[in-house]
Structure formats: structure tokens, C-alpha cells
Length: 375
Image (cartoon, rainbow, N blue to C red; front, side, top):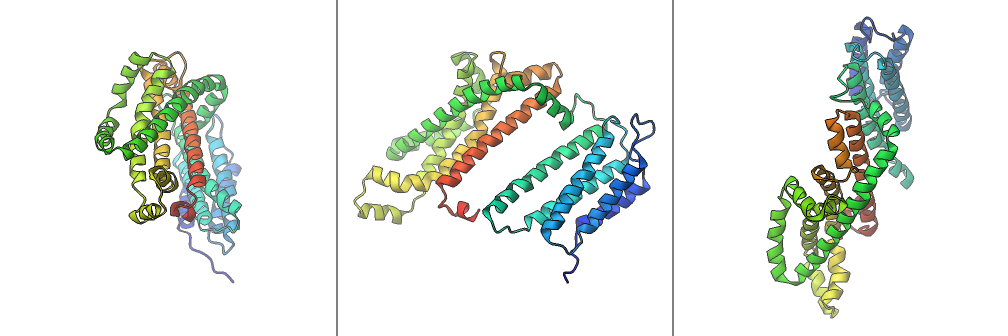
């Protein structure tokens, strides 16, 4: 028979549950919406039961599933008790929330040790584990802001930000269209394309290679807040000036990485191509560019975040009455902090999707690379 496993998270959960039981209730006196003792008792019993499940000699899938459902259910009950009682949470509630977080930690540990046989199972775990981690950032954020009564203008809870996003979809869509689909994409394509073309030319001409790379290092250190106003003066207030900022920010990372990648192929491979009587362009297309692909995609991933940051910051210095940067600078002046966080959340989501698309393209193109084969 399989022996019980040791779980330090389970031990700490039992200690936290015992302290929370002694320090009840979970809400201070005079709460507008009191929480029933039965609900609190069942929640503590569930947390204690899950702590013992973490010790149980069961298959990891069963333990992880029980912890996943139970920890989030208990956290949902606790968060529901805070709604309407903002700022009245006691030590007991925060101890119980910490216990739920530790149970979710144990769940992630169990999931990380699983080795699915199918590709679908492995892909599902790669998505589930970071999803649980991200969900608990939001859960703890919600519990802290509502339970401690943090002023809304300083840090709104995620639920309020979600409500704001749901109620401002047309405005957010217009901002995304102006900033992402016009400025970011245009600047990203032109900047990365120009950097790649100049890198190939610099690889061919030693004068350019020795002259451009030091300049590239210098331009990469230029502050965006100094470049953006100049681009607005040159190209106007519409998306063209923001695209120009993005081009400057993405050109030199692509140039430097591509030049380094073109030098990555070894001398033995180049000698082999010469024995096949390959000219420069044949060697470039069939040997050096494939070897440079990891470097090129590294620049593409770096630029996917730089482009978004550059376009948003550039909109602070002049833009039509639309755009993510314009909305952030305007709404923070009106103290509409939830709208600012809504724009930040949308920008983070779009940036993550952009980065993910580039990463998927990298896996498809550089499937032969050891880092991809091993992952």
C-alpha cells in the first residue's frame, strides 16, 4: 500500500486554520451583511479536509483535482463574504485566504510533477499551471483590496476593473484599433523588416557592419520620452508619428540580433558549402539564415513588447482623441482609475497574444533547434 506523502503546505494550512478558528469571526462588528456561522464552519472544514487530502496516498491527478476545485471554492466563499463588508475583514479571513493559496500552491506542485503521455495532456498542463498562478494573483488582489478597505482611487479590485471593461468595450475597441492595429503593427513590420534588410547588407559590407552596430547601441539608449515629442512634431498627431517611434525602437534590436545570428554558423559548415561550390547568396539562404533564425525570433519577441510600450508612451505627447496612451493620460487626470486599469489590462492581454503568436511561429520555424526539441 502506498504510504502517505509529506506536504509542508498541508501542515501550514492546518496551523493557519487552527489560528483562524480561534480568532473568529471573519468580519468585524457592525458588518452590513453578516456571514452565517454555518458558512464559515463549512469553509474551515473544507480547508482542513483539503489539507489532509494533500497527505493522502492517492494518484496525483486525484489530489490535484480535489485541491483545484476545493481551494477555489473556499476562496470564492470567502470573497463573497467580503463583498458588501469592505474594510471590515479580520485576521481570521486573511488567514483562511492564505490557507487557500497554499492549497492552490500544493495543487500546482502536484500538476508540475505529472508526466502526461499525450501531447494534448502536456499542452493542457502548460496552460493550466500558469492560469492557476495568474488566477491567484487576482484572487489575493481582490481579497486584499476589499478586505482591507483600500481606497478605490488607489487600487481598485479586479472585479471592478472587469466591470469597467465590460461596460467600455466600444471605447476600448477604438483605442486598440488606433494604437495596436495602426501604430504598433505598422511600426513593427517596417522596423523589423528594415532592421533585417540592413543586417543582411551589413553582413555583406564590412564598412556598414563596423559603423552601424556602435550607432545601434547608442540609439538603443535614447530615452523614448525624448524621441516621441520630436516624432510628433515631424509626422503629426495621428498614428504615423507613433509608428515612427516604434520603428526607431524595433530597428536596432533586429539589426544587432540578425548580424549576430548570421555569424552563428560554424566554419566547418561554411567550408562544406564552399566544397559544394555555393555562392554567397546560396550559403546565406541555405545555411546562415536558418542558423540565424533563433536570433531573429529573439529580436521579434523583444520587439513585440517594445513596440507596444513605445506606441502607448508616444501617445502621451500628442494624439487624436482616441488611443490607449491618450485614454490613460486623460482618465488618470479625471481620477477614473478603473478605466486606467482597464486599458492596462487590455494592453497586457494584447501584448501577451502578440508575443504568443511570435513564439508559436518560432516553434514552427526553428523546430530543429535543441531548445525547441527539449521543450
